[in-house]
Length: 284
Ligand code: PAF
Image (cartoon, rainbow, N blue to C red):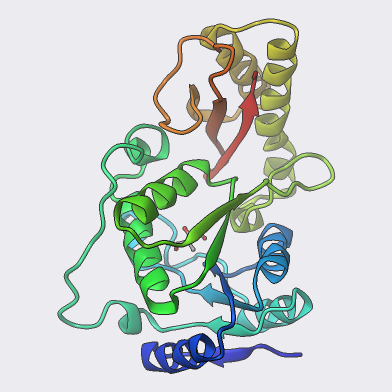
Protein backbone atom coordinates (compact mmCIF):
# COMPACT_ATOMS: atom_id res chain seq x y z
CA UNK A 1 0.00 0.00 0.00
CA UNK A 2 1.22 3.53 -0.77
CA UNK A 3 2.46 5.28 2.37
CA UNK A 4 0.59 8.32 3.66
CA UNK A 5 2.57 11.51 2.94
CA UNK A 6 2.77 14.18 5.64
CA UNK A 7 4.14 17.63 4.78
CA UNK A 8 3.76 19.73 7.90
CA UNK A 9 4.95 19.55 11.50
CA UNK A 10 1.32 19.91 12.67
CA UNK A 11 0.26 16.84 10.67
CA UNK A 12 3.08 14.78 12.26
CA UNK A 13 2.11 15.94 15.75
CA UNK A 14 -1.55 14.98 15.25
CA UNK A 15 -0.65 11.63 13.65
CA UNK A 16 1.86 10.81 16.43
CA UNK A 17 -0.61 11.68 19.20
CA UNK A 18 -3.15 9.28 17.67
CA UNK A 19 -0.51 6.55 17.43
CA UNK A 20 0.50 6.93 21.08
CA UNK A 21 -3.17 6.88 22.18
CA UNK A 22 -3.49 3.55 20.37
CA UNK A 23 -0.34 2.32 22.19
CA UNK A 24 1.49 1.40 18.99
CA UNK A 25 5.30 1.18 18.74
CA UNK A 26 6.90 3.48 16.17
CA UNK A 27 10.14 3.02 14.20
CA UNK A 28 11.61 6.08 12.43
CA UNK A 29 14.07 5.96 9.52
CA UNK A 30 15.41 9.47 8.79
CA UNK A 31 16.75 9.84 5.22
CA UNK A 32 17.60 12.43 2.59
CA UNK A 33 15.81 10.40 -0.10
CA UNK A 34 17.13 8.88 -3.33
CA UNK A 35 16.59 5.64 -1.49
CA UNK A 36 18.61 2.49 -2.10
CA UNK A 37 18.80 -1.02 -0.64
CA UNK A 38 20.69 0.33 2.41
CA UNK A 39 17.74 2.54 3.35
CA UNK A 40 15.27 -0.25 2.62
CA UNK A 41 17.15 -2.60 4.98
CA UNK A 42 16.60 -0.01 7.77
CA UNK A 43 12.88 0.17 6.97
CA UNK A 44 12.47 -3.61 6.94
CA UNK A 45 14.29 -3.87 10.28
CA UNK A 46 11.99 -1.12 11.57
CA UNK A 47 9.02 -3.29 10.62
CA UNK A 48 10.40 -6.12 12.78
CA UNK A 49 10.97 -3.85 15.76
CA UNK A 50 7.76 -1.79 15.78
CA UNK A 51 4.09 -1.77 14.73
CA UNK A 52 4.39 1.29 12.51
CA UNK A 53 7.26 2.59 10.35
CA UNK A 54 7.76 6.23 9.40
CA UNK A 55 10.46 7.61 7.10
CA UNK A 56 11.50 11.20 6.65
CA UNK A 57 12.76 12.41 3.28
CA UNK A 58 14.44 15.77 3.77
CA UNK A 59 17.62 17.11 2.19
CA UNK A 60 18.76 18.98 5.28
CA UNK A 61 20.43 22.27 4.27
CA UNK A 62 22.26 22.81 7.58
CA UNK A 63 24.49 19.74 7.12
CA UNK A 64 25.91 20.90 3.77
CA UNK A 65 28.92 23.22 3.57
CA UNK A 66 28.86 26.24 1.23
CA UNK A 67 30.89 24.37 -1.41
CA UNK A 68 28.99 21.07 -1.10
CA UNK A 69 26.29 19.46 -3.22
CA UNK A 70 23.02 20.68 -1.60
CA UNK A 71 21.46 22.06 -4.81
CA UNK A 72 22.41 19.06 -6.96
CA UNK A 73 21.81 16.33 -4.34
CA UNK A 74 19.93 13.56 -6.24
CA UNK A 75 16.15 13.47 -5.80
CA UNK A 76 13.42 11.06 -6.95
CA UNK A 77 10.35 11.52 -4.78
CA UNK A 78 7.94 9.36 -6.78
CA UNK A 79 10.48 6.51 -7.00
CA UNK A 80 11.18 6.87 -3.27
CA UNK A 81 7.47 6.53 -2.44
CA UNK A 82 7.29 3.28 -4.44
CA UNK A 83 10.41 1.97 -2.67
CA UNK A 84 8.94 2.93 0.74
CA UNK A 85 5.74 1.07 -0.17
CA UNK A 86 7.75 -2.04 -1.09
CA UNK A 87 9.53 -1.93 2.30
CA UNK A 88 6.26 -1.60 4.25
CA UNK A 89 6.61 2.06 5.30
CA UNK A 90 3.34 3.50 6.65
CA UNK A 91 4.12 7.22 6.64
CA UNK A 92 6.55 9.44 4.74
CA UNK A 93 7.32 12.88 6.15
CA UNK A 94 8.56 15.15 3.36
CA UNK A 95 8.65 18.74 4.59
CA UNK A 96 9.84 21.87 2.78
CA UNK A 97 13.00 23.42 4.28
CA UNK A 98 10.87 26.22 5.76
CA UNK A 99 8.87 23.73 7.83
CA UNK A 100 12.00 22.59 9.71
CA UNK A 101 13.78 25.96 9.73
CA UNK A 102 11.03 28.60 9.81
CA UNK A 103 11.86 32.30 10.19
CA UNK A 104 13.17 32.84 13.72
CA UNK A 105 14.65 29.33 13.99
CA UNK A 106 17.72 29.54 16.27
CA UNK A 107 18.39 26.23 18.04
CA UNK A 108 21.34 24.02 17.08
CA UNK A 109 22.72 20.86 18.66
CA UNK A 110 26.44 20.30 18.97
CA UNK A 111 28.02 17.02 20.02
CA UNK A 112 31.52 18.11 20.95
CA UNK A 113 33.72 15.01 21.18
CA UNK A 114 32.76 12.33 18.65
CA UNK A 115 32.20 15.08 16.06
CA UNK A 116 35.96 15.75 16.15
CA UNK A 117 38.34 14.30 13.56
CA UNK A 118 37.49 12.28 10.43
CA UNK A 119 34.47 13.80 8.56
CA UNK A 120 34.00 16.31 11.41
CA UNK A 121 37.31 17.98 10.54
CA UNK A 122 36.85 17.80 6.76
CA UNK A 123 33.23 19.02 6.76
CA UNK A 124 33.02 21.81 9.40
CA UNK A 125 29.48 22.22 10.73
CA UNK A 126 28.27 18.99 9.12
CA UNK A 127 27.55 17.08 12.34
CA UNK A 128 26.00 20.15 13.96
CA UNK A 129 23.51 20.12 11.07
CA UNK A 130 22.94 16.37 11.37
CA UNK A 131 22.50 16.49 15.17
CA UNK A 132 20.11 19.44 14.86
CA UNK A 133 17.79 17.85 12.29
CA UNK A 134 17.85 14.42 13.93
CA UNK A 135 17.02 16.00 17.31
CA UNK A 136 14.11 17.82 15.67
CA UNK A 137 12.85 14.60 14.07
CA UNK A 138 13.18 12.55 17.27
CA UNK A 139 11.36 15.23 19.31
CA UNK A 140 8.65 15.54 16.66
CA UNK A 141 7.99 11.83 16.07
CA UNK A 142 8.93 10.53 19.56
CA UNK A 143 9.70 7.09 18.06
CA UNK A 144 10.51 4.02 20.15
CA UNK A 145 13.34 3.14 17.80
CA UNK A 146 15.28 5.01 15.09
CA UNK A 147 17.49 3.27 12.56
CA UNK A 148 20.66 4.49 10.80
CA UNK A 149 23.25 2.87 8.53
CA UNK A 150 26.76 2.09 9.74
CA UNK A 151 28.12 3.41 6.43
CA UNK A 152 27.95 6.85 8.07
CA UNK A 153 29.74 5.51 11.12
CA UNK A 154 30.75 8.81 12.73
CA UNK A 155 27.21 10.14 12.21
CA UNK A 156 25.85 7.09 14.05
CA UNK A 157 28.16 7.75 17.04
CA UNK A 158 27.15 11.45 17.06
CA UNK A 159 23.46 10.50 17.12
CA UNK A 160 23.98 7.92 19.88
CA UNK A 161 25.84 10.48 22.04
CA UNK A 162 23.17 13.15 21.47
CA UNK A 163 20.33 10.72 22.26
CA UNK A 164 22.10 9.72 25.48
CA UNK A 165 23.14 13.22 26.61
CA UNK A 166 19.75 14.83 25.90
CA UNK A 167 17.80 11.93 27.50
CA UNK A 168 15.76 11.44 24.34
CA UNK A 169 15.18 7.80 25.29
CA UNK A 170 15.07 6.46 21.74
CA UNK A 171 16.54 3.05 20.92
CA UNK A 172 19.16 4.05 18.30
CA UNK A 173 19.93 1.08 16.05
CA UNK A 174 22.90 0.95 13.67
CA UNK A 175 22.57 -1.47 10.76
CA UNK A 176 25.41 -3.00 8.68
CA UNK A 177 26.42 -1.31 5.44
CA UNK A 178 24.66 -2.77 2.40
CA UNK A 179 27.04 -3.31 -0.54
CA UNK A 180 26.74 -3.80 -4.27
CA UNK A 181 27.71 -7.29 -5.46
CA UNK A 182 31.27 -6.05 -6.16
CA UNK A 183 31.70 -4.56 -2.68
CA UNK A 184 30.96 -0.85 -3.23
CA UNK A 185 29.09 0.55 -0.22
CA UNK A 186 25.64 1.75 -1.30
CA UNK A 187 25.25 5.52 -1.20
CA UNK A 188 22.96 8.02 -2.89
CA UNK A 189 26.13 9.82 -3.99
CA UNK A 190 27.22 6.81 -6.10
CA UNK A 191 24.80 8.29 -8.68
CA UNK A 192 27.42 11.00 -9.36
CA UNK A 193 30.05 8.47 -10.52
CA UNK A 194 30.88 7.90 -14.19
CA UNK A 195 31.35 4.19 -15.08
CA UNK A 196 35.12 4.66 -14.89
CA UNK A 197 34.96 6.49 -11.50
CA UNK A 198 32.57 3.80 -10.24
CA UNK A 199 35.17 1.12 -11.07
CA UNK A 200 37.98 3.04 -9.34
CA UNK A 201 35.75 3.60 -6.29
CA UNK A 202 36.05 -0.11 -5.50
CA UNK A 203 39.48 0.70 -4.06
CA UNK A 204 37.81 1.81 -0.79
CA UNK A 205 36.20 -1.56 0.01
CA UNK A 206 39.14 -3.45 -1.50
CA UNK A 207 41.56 -1.52 0.74
CA UNK A 208 39.48 -2.18 3.85
CA UNK A 209 39.39 -5.87 2.92
CA UNK A 210 43.18 -5.95 2.50
CA UNK A 211 43.63 -4.34 5.93
CA UNK A 212 41.16 -6.80 7.48
CA UNK A 213 43.16 -9.71 6.01
CA UNK A 214 46.39 -8.28 7.47
CA UNK A 215 44.76 -7.88 10.89
CA UNK A 216 43.53 -11.48 10.78
CA UNK A 217 47.09 -12.57 9.99
CA UNK A 218 48.36 -10.78 13.11
CA UNK A 219 49.27 -7.24 12.01
CA UNK A 220 48.23 -4.75 14.67
CA UNK A 221 50.03 -1.44 13.87
CA UNK A 222 47.77 1.31 12.58
CA UNK A 223 50.49 2.45 10.16
CA UNK A 224 50.57 -0.95 8.41
CA UNK A 225 46.77 -1.30 8.34
CA UNK A 226 46.18 2.20 6.97
CA UNK A 227 48.98 1.72 4.42
CA UNK A 228 47.12 -1.33 3.05
CA UNK A 229 44.14 0.94 2.33
CA UNK A 230 46.32 3.76 0.92
CA UNK A 231 48.03 1.33 -1.43
CA UNK A 232 44.67 0.50 -3.04
CA UNK A 233 43.67 4.18 -3.21
CA UNK A 234 46.95 5.03 -4.98
CA UNK A 235 46.63 2.10 -7.40
CA UNK A 236 43.16 3.36 -8.41
CA UNK A 237 44.35 6.98 -8.54
CA UNK A 238 41.87 8.11 -5.86
CA UNK A 239 42.61 11.19 -3.77
CA UNK A 240 42.69 10.32 -0.07
CA UNK A 241 40.74 12.48 2.36
CA UNK A 242 41.61 10.31 5.37
CA UNK A 243 42.40 6.74 6.38
CA UNK A 244 42.29 6.16 10.15
CA UNK A 245 42.19 3.41 12.74
CA UNK A 246 40.06 4.54 15.71
CA UNK A 247 38.42 3.32 18.89
CA UNK A 248 35.01 2.06 17.71
CA UNK A 249 33.01 4.13 20.21
CA UNK A 250 35.00 7.23 21.07
CA UNK A 251 36.52 7.53 17.56
CA UNK A 252 39.90 8.52 19.02
CA UNK A 253 42.95 7.42 16.96
CA UNK A 254 44.53 4.09 17.90
CA UNK A 255 48.26 3.45 17.27
CA UNK A 256 47.68 -0.33 17.43
CA UNK A 257 44.89 -2.87 17.69
CA UNK A 258 44.51 -4.11 21.27
CA UNK A 259 42.80 -7.35 22.28
CA UNK A 260 39.38 -6.57 23.77
CA UNK A 261 39.28 -2.99 22.43
CA UNK A 262 36.78 -2.72 19.54
CA UNK A 263 38.34 -0.81 16.66
CA UNK A 264 37.12 0.58 13.36
CA UNK A 265 39.01 1.45 10.20
CA UNK A 266 37.54 4.38 8.27
CA UNK A 267 38.35 5.78 4.84
CA UNK A 268 37.24 8.81 2.82
CA UNK A 269 38.47 9.43 -0.72
CA UNK A 270 37.54 11.24 -3.91
CA UNK A 271 36.77 9.36 -7.12
CA UNK A 272 36.78 12.22 -9.61
CA UNK A 273 35.03 15.01 -7.72
CA UNK A 274 32.77 12.66 -5.71
CA UNK A 275 33.70 12.14 -2.07
CA UNK A 276 33.03 8.59 -0.86
CA UNK A 277 33.30 7.06 2.60
CA UNK A 278 33.47 3.51 3.90
CA UNK A 279 34.48 1.71 7.10
CA UNK A 280 34.55 -1.62 8.81
CA UNK A 281 35.24 -3.21 12.17
CA UNK A 282 38.77 -4.57 12.39
CA UNK A 283 40.59 -6.97 14.71
CA UNK A 284 38.93 -8.11 17.93
O1 PAF B 1 22.28 9.94 6.73
C1 PAF B 1 21.49 10.79 6.26
O2 PAF B 1 20.85 10.57 5.23
C2 PAF B 1 21.33 12.13 6.94
O3 PAF B 1 22.54 12.59 7.43
C3 PAF B 1 20.24 12.14 8.03
C4 PAF B 1 20.59 11.20 9.19
C5 PAF B 1 18.92 11.73 7.42
C6 PAF B 1 20.09 13.55 8.61
O4 PAF B 1 19.75 14.48 7.62
